[in-house]
Amino acid sequence: MQNPNGIFNTHSDDLATGGGHQHGGALHSGLNFRSAEFSLSAAYGRYLDGRLNITTDGRTIALEEAWLRGRARDSGTALKFGKFLSAVGWQNALHPHAWDFVDQPLPYQLLLAGGLGGNGAQASWEHHESSWRTKIGLEALTGGNEAIAALRPNPTAFTTTQGQKVSVPFGVRPDWPTIWTVFGRLAISPMAGQEWGANLGWVHGRMHQELHQFHPGINDADHALQGHTDTLVAGLRYAQMTEKPTQGGWDVMAEYFYQRKDLLLNFHQTKPWNIGQPRTLNADGYYVQARYRVTPSWTAGLRFDVTGHIQEALRDAAPNFCAPPYANLRCPRQNSQFEGISRRSALVDWQIDTRQSLRLQISRTHSSVALDSNLDGRMEAVNQHFTQAFLQYRLALGTPPKHHRHAD
Image (tube, rainbow, N blue to C red):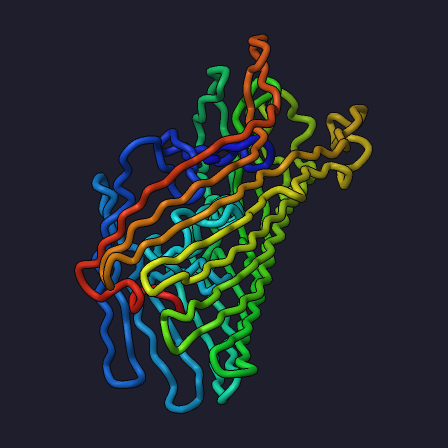
């Protein structure tokens, strides 16, 4: 799941540490300590508030969020600045302890590398009426998101998989911002206890760099790409809220993601005549999930999520012949298609009290993975099915979780 075949295969290995991205963090079979979080929220009157979040996974300590937000008097406008999670999508701004399932939907894991955030500013405007409300906003962020704005150092002595010392000409990191986002939300309550919602978002990565390493049968040699990315997000939501907890309540949501990467090949270990040719990487993803409160303490949920229903690498925009001094060589213009990943999950959530919960989740995943199935030294795309079982315990020592979702 963390290193699938196709476009999502390990393509942005960190040259400084030697490790690749994990699309939101890997879990291992056995006992996992996901994180402990210290959160402090404060407000100064009605027009200024802020938040500080520090997390640890038992090995490192990280500053997750630290921001201030000022609100204009009675106009609905606000300005947030600091380090924060983007408001794009229904679930991006949620911290792990507030996720509806044990793990994130696949589009968030693979198309947004586990979530979008960074240092910057957010300008937003909200309007509320008795039966509807809306919010629109613009964000300017500086971050190194591995899926849409990965930034590699410009190594002058990179050691390739075959042991050669080469220089990879990655461009210079652009000035702030490296990521632009635009988002909008609309919620309508046609009758008491019901709410329909819709969201729309766009994410633009000004600079995205990928280093694809040699994998026999997958990548014929180390090569590098650089360019910009665009990701569109659209979603719908329905919530049923009851006055009495024993009457149940539905929360249903769905989102669709479409991502396009417009890149140029700027390094190839064995075919320098291909340098400068365009590569377009297209991928999409979606999920549909529903949660139903069976009793005040028990909730059941189902989720179906997919990435890579569209997953293609396009080369047909390349010229027929390569640039001088290789003008006598034909450029590769063939396109590549890859199979996606799909998953079905079922969840049972027991709310022990306002501060504790216990979850059981079973997931069945279909994925194409790279395996040397016939032991000839070359990888092949092999379809496999995986079953995952999660048992998760959550505890809040401060504010109960229901008041602590961190969602704007």
